[in-house]
Amino acid sequence: MSGQRQQVDISTLPLPQLNQLAQQLDQEIEFLTASLSQLKLTQTKFAESQDCLSKVNKENLDKDILVPLTGSMYVPGQLSNVQECLVDIGTGYYIEMSVDASKDYFKRKVEYVTKQIEKIQPLVQDKYKMKRVVMEMVQMKVQAQLAAQQAAPVTAGGSS
Image 1 (tube, rainbow, N blue to C red):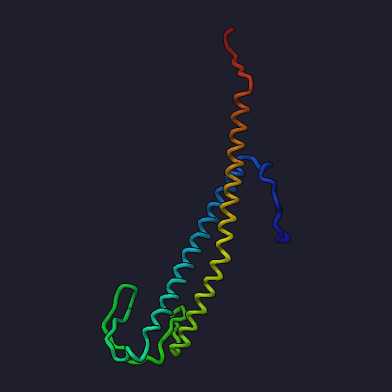
Image 2: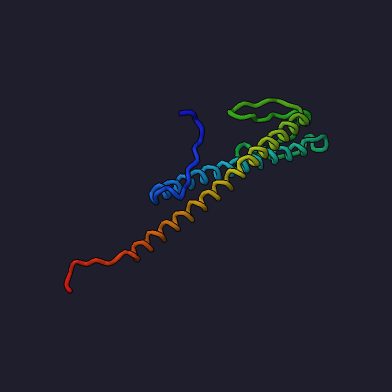
C-alpha cells in the first residue's frame, strides 16, 4: 500500500458502512478530545509552576512555607535557597537550575504545549464536521428507504 489517502463519495456507501464510519469518527473525536484535555491540564501545570517561581525571591528567604510532597500532601519547611531550584523534567529526572532558567524552561514548555493544542483543535472541529455530514447522509438514506417501502405496492397473498 502506498500510504496515500483515497477519497470516497459517502453518498455511495451503504447504510451499514455509514454507521461504521460514524462510529469511527466518534472514536477519533473522543481520542482527540481526551488528548486536548490532557494537553490543557499539562499547560496549566507548567503555567502554575512558572507562577510559583515568582515567589522564590530574596524577600521570602528563610520564610516558612508548605512543601508539596504530592498533589494533596504538604509538609512545613523553610525557603533556604532562592538562587536555584530542582525542576522535574519528567520520568523521575530532576535538574538543578537557576530560578531564571527554570522560569524560562516553563515558559518554553507552555509555548510548546500551546502550539500542540493549536494543532489539535482544528482536527477536532474537522472530525465534528465530518460526523455531521455522515449523520445527515445516514438520515437521508433512512428516509429514502422508508419512502421506498411506503411506495412499494402491498402484495398480500390472501383473500379477494
